[in-house]
Image (spheres, rainbow, N blue to C red):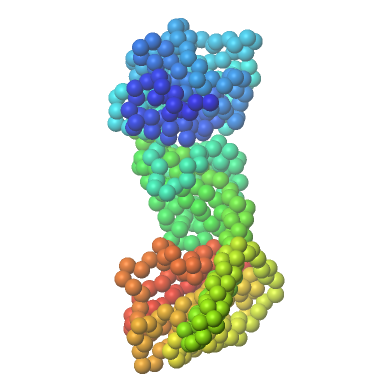
Length: 497
């Protein structure tokens, strides 16, 4: 089957930017099809022949299709495409045709011009073809869907749909299966689908959405005030004609993915379309996978480091041996140990934490002592300020892994190449508003210029970041210490998940 690009390049002379726009439209048009209860067919003209070729098609998930056979690649001409020619010549949406019969199935044809933003040229025509065999009196849901579909159709004709994609954003298309909320120009909810109402109930809203300010409600529900303010800003941006990136909202253990889209038919902001999808279970599984992955990488990291230490000792011994045969044997052993380290790259293992609570202070003290014994190249003092107290195992397990990595990193790297007179690493902790605030600080050489934790390729720091933000659902920051050295600041929520 030929792709959209293949068909366009074979039959037309459209510019690369035009083809890219058609690609983006075909990536986001499922929601237009579903809201319209109609098939969408993308037609491009074959100029020399007065014909049109269908380069893409999407069927609705909300209604029967008007075409049992795939239309992509079909070339049509004559009276069959007269309405497409009218749309290209006049640059307007065409709706005035009588129903067309395919055997015993009636269908309604409409056509929408496709333009790029800021361009007057019609580069393609969308056929919007509705199967009328199951037509019935529309209820409130259908009426709201059709109204919204008409607004999006006008935006396609204006060139303002689909909105531009944000760098790094996934290309998953908006779906009618997502909860749909329609806002008027003031941000009030004029319609909320049952799925949207259910998603907001998961976030903790007991009342109905209709008539409420969605931005205010969303900001109030989200657990993190800063995240709530960000979500509010995104809704306001959509109301003013912008299309912000998707946003995940978390409240009461639930996670909802929100996407706010402006409604601007004919360039006039009339409100916004907000899509919300309950992804609580998806994120729960993601966290489990992240935990397993981080555990596997931690095992690999420790075993690999230990084997490298053994290899280093053997290499040191080889340098001190004067007998060539013995030196060769030791060098062979070094290579064998290194090969075993590579095997550990493929090992997989995960640990399961129990539901019991543990006294965490003794664990931290033992981890700190081990880090100094194994990793310190100078005499380093590690001390703890404050008490962790009793922690549930689901928090204690990943937290001890993070602290172990931070302490090992500090005693191994913080005091090179020049150590202060009294090398020291301090682990301080206090609880505040159901949060655990932990700082691991040293008085060493400090971070290198331009250091970025998110961009660091060091495995240990990647493990720290993954566990802190994933399994622990907290935040972590590595920064220069005011008095010299480095400090890692971590905030971990203690609320039951």
